[in-house]
Length: 139
Image (cartoon, rainbow, N blue to C red; front, side, top):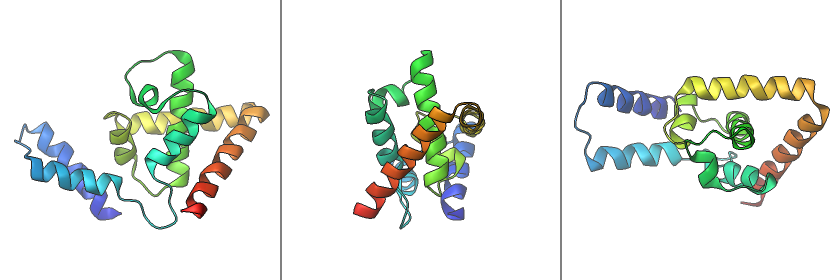
């Protein structure tokens, strides 16, 4: 996992200093970002499960649009990605359309508060975690 985080950091630094990133480097970084450790759900699987549950689609959750309904679902998906994988926050942010790690931290904090304040929402999160676990166990 540390190697993947290092590659993500390297990629961000290369972009910051306007280093010309070639296609080989991009493919390596993409491969690292989508690698799934044994026992983990993939980010794509999690987002697909969340999108289906909330009757939306993956493209909406990865888009820049910010309608309140989509934002809440997107933050829920981000939270579940932090809970059901060993992916770093920058990797999860990259998956969600290049968002910053702080966006993922914010989503995690918000969902935690919503779960504390709303028992029905907490049960939905538990149901989604169960669906994700079932998907991992089936694979």
